[in-house]
Length: 113
Image 1 (cartoon, rainbow, N blue to C red):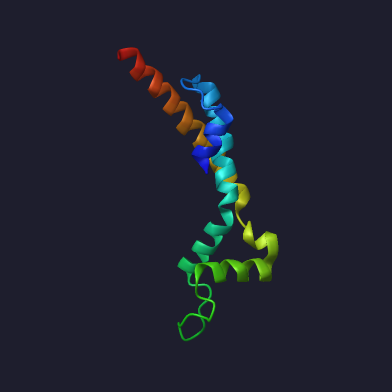
Image 2 (cartoon, rainbow, N blue to C red):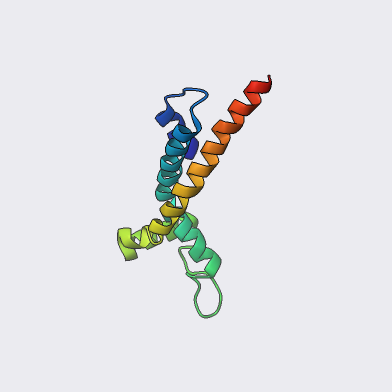
């Protein structure tokens, strides 16, 4: 999702200035993190052992999709997007750094070729 969004924002142009790469990267990474938040919430709950009964055996709805559907039904959008704000905040910073570094590195390598 992140790279498709980055390519879309950049219009497929090569050799962007690092500052522009940082802006596009920040937005792309934030969008990707926001869109995938429900999947991350379910994964974290599975890892934490939510959805198990007292005996340690899994409940009937044990598939990933079933757990996602149950979460949506029982907790709605608030449950699906729990923790989205810190994920997006972190993504803005890490995406800007990642893509600015990527664009700067590409330019530095091209100077030597």
